[in-house]
Amino acid sequence: MDNIKHFISTFMTAVSNCSLYSREHEAFDDLAKKTHSVLHDVMKDRLELMILENELVVNSTPFRSSGLHKNNIVNRFRKKGIARVDFMQGVSLPEVKQFIIDMSSPDKGLKVYPHIKFGTVDINVTVPEMDGVLEQHSIPENIEKVKDIFHLASPFKMLNIAGIDEVVAHFIASIKREANILKYLNPVKMFSEYTYTHATNVAMISVFQAESIGMESELLREIGVAALLHDTGKMYISNEILEKKDKLDEKEFAEIKKHPFHGARYLAKIDDVPRLASIVAFEHHIKYDQSGYPALRANGRKQHICSQIIAIADFFDALRSQRPYRESMNIKNILALMKKGAGKDFNPVLVDNFIGKIEQMFAK
Image (cartoon, rainbow, N blue to C red; front, side, top):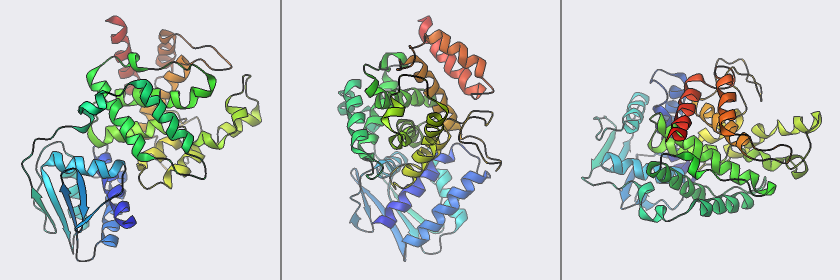
């Protein structure tokens, strides 16, 4: 079922990114073409996807793989009121493009497509992230889960994406219940805890920002996953450098600057990890004016908007956290630095929105 897994991953990446781009945008066109190509590779006469309760059945065979994209396609079909989709022989690229656009829309219902048939079901959907089971989990428990996930991952062993999906679902539920993100941010108690505590905080802050500007559903989950994994490349950097109490020398800083490349390459090899996670891992130290690192090639593409969101979260949490070589900074001073960096370091619209939300919390 690896080829089916690849199709589901590609299709859901296209759906989740569709809301970011117009249908004429180069990025959307690339994702739609890739989805169409992978679809033709996996189907013979047809490809049948069916939802039975919370399970996905592909060509009458249960799809046993766990992961973000499998969960997302089940949730997306249920929200659309779809029980079954059949891709028939002869399906064209324009049909696939329109199907992706319609699947990304929050409105219920789909158009008629010559070679894509679907069956509907009248259901009342309960959003998974609001289920009582998720509400019972505390933030410290989620940090422990992130810690376990990170400790099991290595340059030679892939991480558990199913566990990450559960943690992100809880973040989303928490933010929907409580608008004050500052209540959920965790202090770094020991320097050795910084990696996973910082990752947890950055994910919470990123989901908060994304939700505040209207992002939702699969894209919101993918941003949470990407934020949680943004520093994955640091597993390739020695602890001596990561936990050094003095300022890094030129050679050590050059080593640190390699972690975006390492992280992007590592995440790109994992089928169940959203494509967005690899992009963010590579771009989160690139600045809005395209300075920073790694250097962007002159290909005309700017930093992804989700990378811009996560870069804001990364900066904010890094400065509010105590590190071996410096004390934590007052939040109001951090916001002043962020205002100063608007237009150069950060997307001015996004950073103004974030600062405004944080200042509202102080005003209450």
